[in-house]
Length: 173
Image (cartoon, rainbow, N blue to C red; front, top):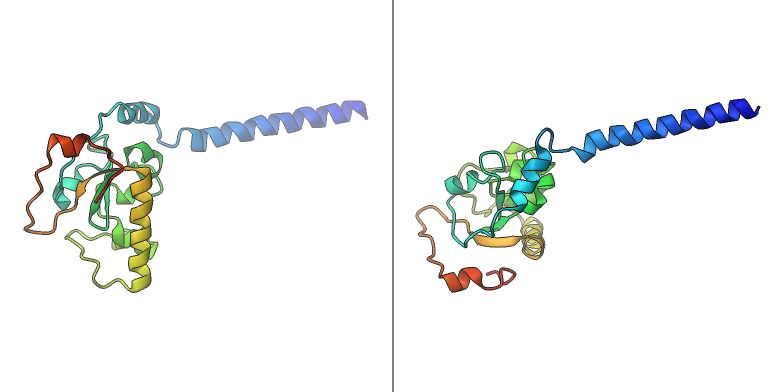
């Protein structure tokens, strides 16, 4: 009996180690080959100077073409680079990187259909969805750096002074 129990214990230990290893491979290296290097590169980026973005300019910051990841919520652009596990190319919300995420967040939709290629004024969202957008905006303000506004078509970017750029980034518009 003791031999059988010992064999069972060794078998369970082997299964536990195998399961832990598989979980590590699946979630520990979530960003795939070079993921850790990408994370280190992103962490080394300096704080971004405040500026405004057109949709086209915002798309450059999708985590694939540029290690910095930006997204817009309710007309405000946030640097979500430190959340690259979520917003990077391999992350569950990677679809929002370099885009206006407002509609997708308001409707809880992670499909390309929730993203618009043109400026989205969100005028067709109902009151509950608009409240959801405002709640998401507040969460992003608390967690990530505000870097500027998402420009409407034909709108000119603001000129930010060095003083505005260096003052506490937690004070957003």
